[in-house]
Length: 185
Image 1 (tube, rainbow, N blue to C red):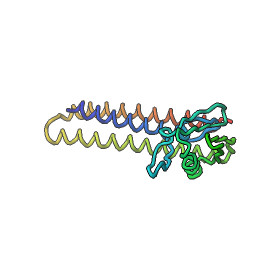
Image 2: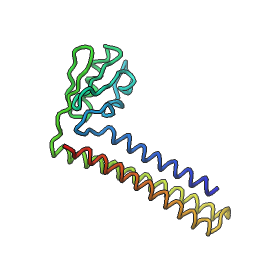
Image 3: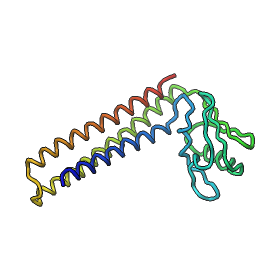
Image 4: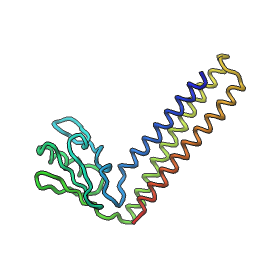
C-alpha cells in the first residue's frame, strides 16, 4: 500500500519535470528550432490544431525556420497564429511555404526569457511539492486507519523526500541548461 503511494507520487513528479521540458522547448533561444512553433495552436477550418499536425517544420539554417503546410489554404491561418503568438518574429510567405527568420535576441529580451524560464521552473517545483504533500497526506491517512505503523511512515517519508529531492534537482538541471542556451550569444 505504501509502495503504491510512493510510485504514484514518483510518476506524478516525473510528469511535472517532463511538462517543464516541453514548456521550455517552446522558449526561443538564439537558434531556430522546430520546437518553438510545433505546438502552436492554429485555427484550421475552425478547429484549434497543433501546427505540427498540418505542416512540416524544418530549420535549414541556424536562424531560419521553414514551415511547409500540407494544405496551401492553411498558409494565412498559420501566419495569423504566428503573429498572435509571443515569438516576436514576422513570417513571410511565397504562397507555398512560410519563412520565419529569427532575429538575434537583445540583451533585455534574453533577461526577460530567463525570467520566464525561472518562473516556469518555480511552477514545476511547486507542482512537485504539491505531489509530495498529497502523498504524505495519504501516508498519514494509512497510519490513522491502522494500515501502517509509525515506523513504516517514517521510512516512507524518508523515501518520499529522496524522490522529491531528485526531481527538484532534475528541474534545477533543466532550468540551468535552458538559461545557458538563452544567454548564449
